[in-house]
Image 1 (cartoon, helix red, strand yellow):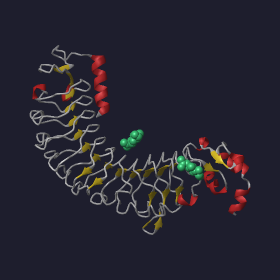
Image 2 (tube, protein in one colour; image 1 turned 60 degrees about the vertical axis):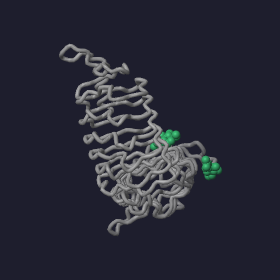
Image 3 (cartoon, helix red, strand yellow; image 1 turned 60 degrees about the horizontal axis):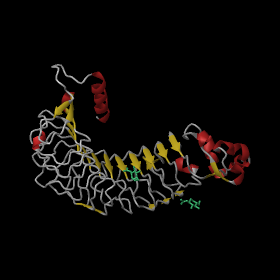
Image 4 (cartoon, protein in one colour; image 1 turned 120 degrees about the vertical axis):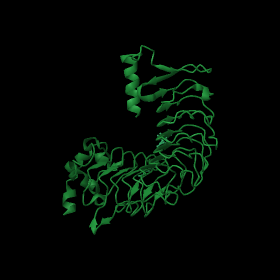
Length: 376
Ligand SMILES: *[C@@H]1O[C@H](CO)[C@@H](O)[C@H](O)[C@H]1NC(C)=O
Ligand SMILES: *[C@@H]1O[C@H](CO)[C@@H](O)[C@H](O)[C@H]1NC(C)=O
């Protein structure tokens, strides 16, 4: 939708600023006492982004047929409950990057039964109640990232039965989150809890949705170890992101074994991550050894060594090991047998031993002639 929006803006700027009737079509909101001017585009798009709006009320006169309303990047502190009472067809509402601190409990979203996307990220929200999202029965995407929650009560998301994408990242330290009750949240695709200060995988908090979740972002959490079966029960998960964890050091045996549907793991930019157990992915499906997902991104960690046996039986398509201080001894020789799988193998550099320092990993087999002898 963002791309479409961008394209439309571009076209309007370049193609024409007049509609068929010869009126200036680009400004459709202007007849309000606040002298706010917003641009409108075909198909009910209204753009009030970046207008220094700090005080809005129903006198803004949002056109009735608005389906897409962008009020982001203003200085809005409160949103009056009647603001949206006439825009019953609104599908997407962007309120990100304002100063909204509170959403009145008399459910100002109530009229928005058609709303599918609500972006409240980068505001100052510190609490939500069980009625905050009341009435948003078609809501599929909810972005609450970068706010100031410290707790999230259970049942907050009960009124939004069709939620698929939920972002509660960077909340300046969620320390308590009750079990995310998205029980009839059966279509859920993505939950992001990135950049919160959990010090363990929030398995319990996600226990009611873990069996249906397909994408989970836990980047930036304050975890040092990922333990045996930390992801117990996440059978549908296809993509897992564990990037930029400031304290992560180790991934233990069977850490990812429960992730039987995993297709892609992103575990990058973890400056202290130095150990991944050779059996971290070990799993069998119908008696067959499966091991790793098809795509694994491990760039910019502190790995000196990674076991080739971790990837057996080699059903992997992409493996990115760039930016790690690799020790190019015989234990790493397996890398040279997989040139088509290793992402950018030519740019992979040895950190040690001394005679191979700063040499490309592919030089390993030239210099370490005895590796082959060792393996036989
Ligand atoms: C987490 O915070 C870091 C540092 O502020 C930022 O670069 C990153 O984009 C954030 N990640 C997410 C998923 O919000
Ligand atoms: C990376 O690992 C090396 C030992 O292999 C250690 O000396 C160094 O401090 C580690 N770096 C970080 C950022 O943890």
